[in-house]
Image (tube, rainbow over all chains, first blue to last red; front, side):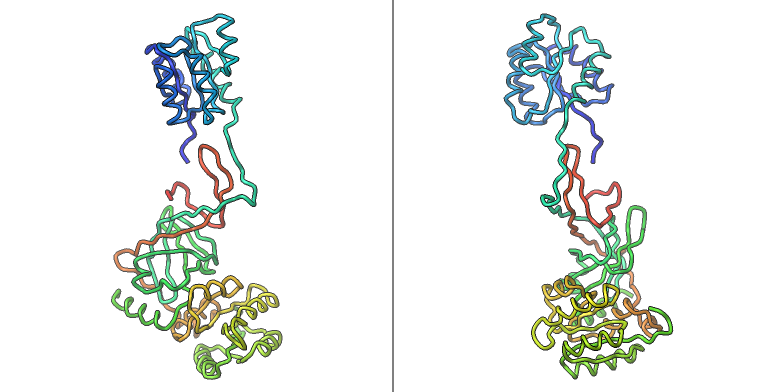
Length: 228
Length: 176
């Protein structure tokens, strides 16, 4: 799991504002993306949904209000708040932005402390989807782990792996060695001998081969003879 | 196994020739065997003799009765009694089914003595058996790569990751 860094998209056509806001927000621990217009912003958010969007109102081409409208219509952005960052201080603008869904309104010139406080609040209020699946709906995930068979005898082997496999469980295992020994028809089971720590980050898992015949035994002996 | 106790194996197989050979092999390993040839006899002796281990054929009396016997042993004596299946069947399905109903191990016929001895060692630590235990050999070139497939249950999801649960323990920081 990577460290949880929240991502913010800033829309402004003024390079110096983008630069300043980026610096403030990255300094506060956010990852920042920039867009200089509505079209570019809409493209960006669809590729990578941010945790929050900051938009200016007066932009070249479509305005920040138009961004708010388009933002509302995108299903994947339903949980993403928009904060307006604008030099416009009129009641009408604030009212219009809020009615279009903006959660907060920060005025320019940028005050770093206020901007960060408002962003923090907007993100805090927001619940990001976290799902705990009910027991009957939990699906099975298959995980592939790399391992290494380091020792073997005629009834089992030691499997070094970054997993401590639970005792007495059946495991699906493939390895060139097992193919060479002709054991594809057998079942592999972690034996009742407890797994133990091996090299750093590794466990030694004692695996029993179940379903051996004398045909297997001959082949195993023949091959192991060549190891000495 | 406690020292001083004579290891006792309870056998069930309807093939007398097989029973004779098996008893002889077990005797060499210091294990006394009690031979039964049908399910009824096996169950009766099971309660009487308190064996150290049960060696069960799958097809006694009729097809698949062995599975029922394994279940019966588990019910009567719990999980501590080792049960090894000895069977002419050796397909994965039969092996898997035997393990599911409670067998500890499965050796397919024709039996290999060394394998039988090694497997028995795992379940009964007699002196004779310990001396015949197979040693581990180092695999050449530092080992053979293996791919392990494990099943986990998906419990929680959020945008930063997923939470899985299982009886296995994954090492921190490993990549899967």
